[in-house]
Image (tube, rainbow, N blue to C red; front, side, top):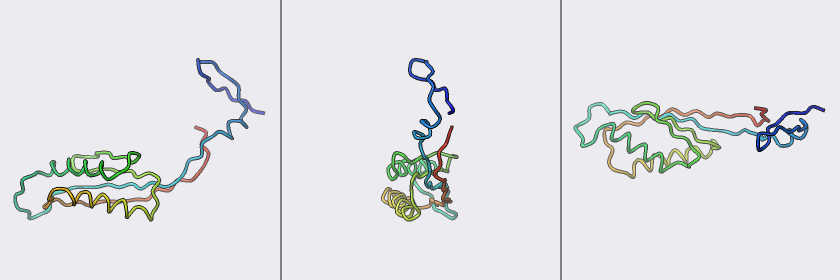
Length: 131
């Protein structure tokens, strides 16, 4: 039998068998969706009352309103957002994406702003991790 030395509350160290820790190890796995949004000025646009940076700030708020608290929104560059949607199936992605775009379009007029996106599904296996 193998014993592991695990720290206990109060700085003490206790001995626990490897079999006991195997039963308590968390199992991870599932799917995430990685999204990269890129906002830019459309070509041949007339003057508008707001700048690209104003539109980027509003898009940031749009993402916060449309996504769950468990999803991650990272400002990658001045006009780019990297979004990680956790535990989302391929069937649910179009619904979430439409919700983001509906929230954006429901706001003020954003003529002259072009939004493009790149998307990738990432599947990670359900395994026990010892780390």
